[in-house]
Length: 463
Image 1: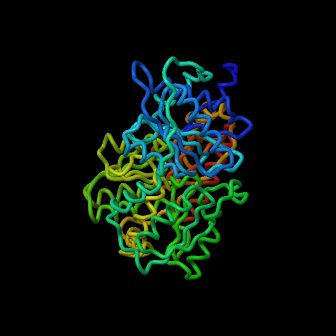
Image 2 (image 1 turned 180 degrees about the horizontal axis):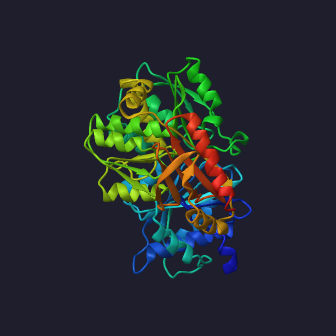
Image 3 (image 1 turned 120 degrees about the horizontal axis):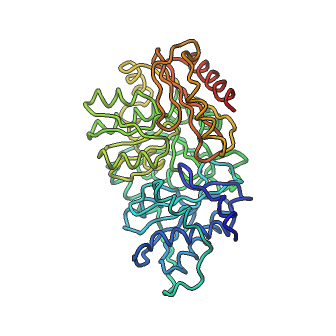
């Protein structure tokens, strides 16, 4: 395998993802060798690594390839009995004090993608310095490292995790609560629904069967892809709907009023946690400023980071924060796991709803802190062109956007324009796809739509 072939392996905001014509066995094995080298440097002895995989047809095979490379290098490898959510694997790494973990998943991407995430000791996402070192160290696997071959041990990761989740959330009594759960054919099936059911809820299951093609729909829990879940709740069959993405590290919630914006869900979850505990919040620059107002009202602070949960996780540790999250539906509680966890958060959301209906919580937040509308769109842009386009954007900031004056400009993770009416527009590169993202927030949907259109025009002018 040539060095030029390995150049296709690039870790973005959340691991390396690619279509299956590029995500090949030789490249996956090279990643396994680079991870082994990273964990062994400079003089460390091989430890134990967990290797998990999602419900994609190719994931179990790629996981076996990684496990084989690690074992050749002397590592013992823990593997699950079946596909597992990423947070279950990450928590296993933390709970067992493992050297690290590797997860085969392309998360919410379509079925013709796969990916790999590296989780260092502690279970938080790997930072850029770590993933850069892995990419720089890519090489074909060794055949004889001069040490004994490691063992492969099959482990039930699900049951210990579920027991911990119930204990962490004080095993809430969800009796009388009827929930609808949509696994989107992903790895949350038999995990998130089982957790909710074990706490007394009646759970109606949607797309909890195995389908490696995800029914022909990317397993991303966006409003457009959760029509059946929305209908189930709106028609009164369930009082709350919950969905996970393909590897169940993200969550979406549906109430009687429909799909709940993840920014509002962030505020609901944070305020619910603050009913029993205290602590700061961490949010990305693309997440609503409502979080700052909620934190301030409780004499706490919201800390901003670049987009990507690896940045959120680092700040959660540095700031000793209670909670961290992002507008895409990824949330984590620091002393549980400094990583996204759509399984445990599902239980927290149900607990919050059982105590006070989430729609009522949202109404209270809007009354106290104002209303928001937020959305994003994507513009195709080759990876190699992204830096040039962003540089051009930074040099061509208009005085007004959608007829409102630009008050401030930030270059943290792209180009962010804050406008005189309190709305904002952020243009940043996707870390996983050849696209530029345009994020906007405003007080009304009409204003939001105007901002999105203006942001798309700004990008198109520089392509």
